[in-house]
Image (cartoon, rainbow, N blue to C red; front, side):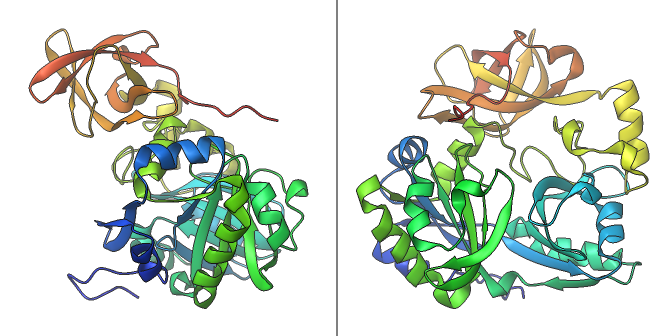
Length: 369
């Protein structure tokens, strides 16, 4: 249910964040923690130890029944039929123009049952879009208000969470999930995340938010766990080359234009926008999302102009200094002819142009161990 106009929504942990000294900001209609100890120490904790995020603002939609698979196959770009029970994948919720209504995670929880995690600012719009196109008889429910979501991320995540859960975490593969208990409470535990690190996203009853949050911190003290806000979440995902909806893609951007060809399974059969994606796959896209790294001092911010030979050719979609790599990096949408690795570009920063270079993504990839 949407909050009244002008009223910020709050997660169940809002007062907890304030007691812990979080700096709070408005984000997508929510009052959320931006940082506690600072973006740099929080970012570094996730890369080297562990951090805990309250991401209860994210939305959840459940689709069930004999028509569930057909509905998701029609509306999303990835091939839902390939999912096994207990497996999840990343996908795009599509429109007829090949644009992305949202990006989302699809979890297959049963033979005819699916659990979607969608972006906070899009949860009502996504639900409306899905129900408007529901011609398969599937049962669609917006269950966002029923769940809190905590994201424990970092190389120490397994050691911290395992004593608290009945789920065998070492047996849980990346992008798989299991139902079990956390602190004796029934939860869904998924080996997913938005940081580029190993970790888990735990979906739990709202009423148990504070108890489980506190228990994870107590269990993680010896591992150096820290609370993390949206600031570190953004720098971590950018460093790992992960996209942010509304910045790096939107309803007017196709997955191919967002460098997400891998989530488009054109061979699965008809789905919204497939004909446009098929044409782009054959002919190529006019504009493409690329990674870049600054070669001169300066931090490229979102919407900064991208310049080649004194001509503005595109704009930065996401940009920041990233603490682990100690570099200024970003993503930008540019014409295909300027998208090759090694292409020299300039970023306009407060009226001054600074040199940058197109580089491969992801910028950071964790070592598998």
